[in-house]
Length: 153
Image (cartoon, rainbow, N blue to C red; front, side):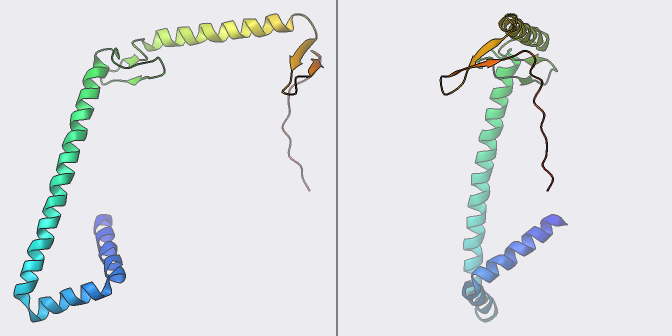
């Protein structure tokens, strides 16, 4: 039912935008139906041409989708980089040829390495950090976490 509403409102909008054209078409349909038949065939030809173009585009998209699926099922070997990841239709997750478990282990190892590096930097007591103004600033370990607050007026 919603599709019919969309079509109906589309026709009304076309009539609103082109009132003279629509009036001429109605007058031709009433007073010269043989001319309206020719106009109808022309409009039908345009619609058929649009449907053919739409069908060709849909076929090309289907063909690309089938090719991507075939590449993806081959283990993601044809996809470049490790940033691509997804789930194929077999239920196996691949990221650059890696399974989900391998990816999680690698990410966990990277997170652990970053955490160890942060702890090594903090092990000296006070830390020096460089700000964007190239000035050095002393930060104590006694400083607490950032707290977001809202001002009430």
